[in-house]
Image 1: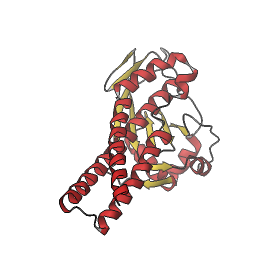
Image 2: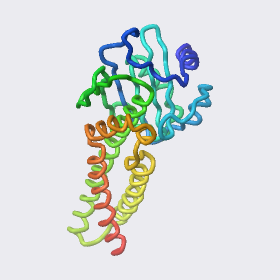
Image 3: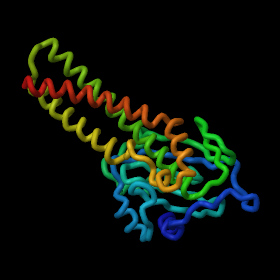
Image 4: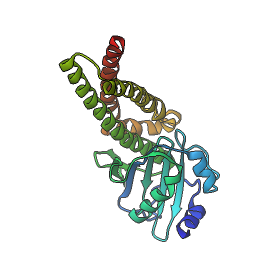
Length: 259
């Protein structure tokens, strides 16, 4: 109850401060991304916490949490990803528990894809950190979006590999026996439905093929967007998933025609 009251009071639509010589900043701002569930109902989430916020970036909302030690930010995406910026570990765990009622198809703890990153002062994009001349709300939007996409892709890549493995077993069985059993027919129909669902989720919900709203509106943030997309290999990972899904789709279509 105390934690929820604190979050109600601290969750506001506040953008991060810029780097400043007069405002002390941590040497490195930790960023932690987690793919929590297939969906998070952002509208009910906002209503529950009595927040008057507008869309942050692609159907998401940002909370700013002030503690005695630091100012942190939590970005919640409706496709199931949550990104913590400068939020201590115990508070992250509490937030994840508090978000659970708004999640659909929650991924069990321990199986949730995660990504850790850092924001530092400077001008360089690297594998484990991004160095920026200033940290503001637009940079935060870009960074949060890319990391959210990254953990979501990890989840869907694992699901696609599991589907491909299941389809390979099905294919081997039919090759060996020459017929479909009743169980194999149900497995095939399930694979076709799941394949279509994954296509919809990856392309429509996560928005891999779309540029960040911030990068479209403000060209000065486009380099950060493109640099992070390349660093996390977002498009390459998406193409690999798409190739596997297309492979399953084409072979499933052949089997359905045979049936």
